[in-house]
Image (cartoon, rainbow, N blue to C red; front, side, top):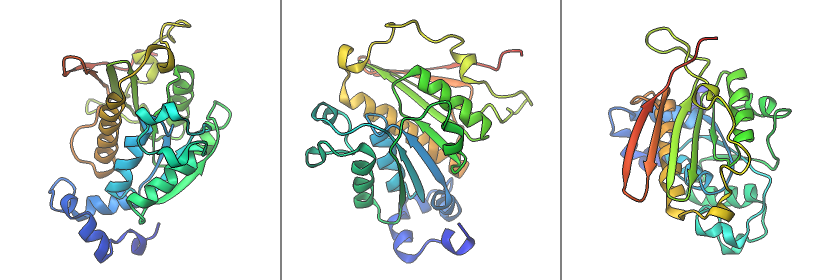
Length: 255
């Protein structure tokens, strides 16, 4: 995107006025959002609010990666889709919804399942990736590819009434010059089979995915605009039943 394409037109200035008056974002920050290329992996419970809020915020290019179709049981939490789109590919359904939210945003549909073989090639066209998946193995592939491509990854996970959120940027160093932690520093081993039941088996409150996905979108906006302190090296834990938040710190382990 060249300089002219980064500039906000009169309609965009009006659309993003509440961002522009924030000193932490302002016109320069909004221009950064317009120039940003963000890939959201998973157009489900987490991906729905992430995609919706990033489109509304004016992120210029949003990639949507998912290989599933919209089913009736999705609609309790996957709010980017609706009853008229049952049976549609989730990538197409989400892209149509995002154009309704903000026609200034470009969407790219990746109708595929991301794995170790294709992740790095896909990530190379983006500045940042958001993990909205529900598979630990997939999350490992995403984290490895993001590190190889030297881009941050905003990661969240949900279960029943609880959620977690962190930002991975192991290609960068902290204020003390230490390499930022990897996913394996947070989770040295994958959970044993059956330890984390799927939401179809265990159930999940739809609004929980909205809480965690919105927090993911907030971290993306912070990373792009340089405002605030992202959750790098910190894991946010949310308990929806008692409305409590807790943050724990973690570091890169010696190699």
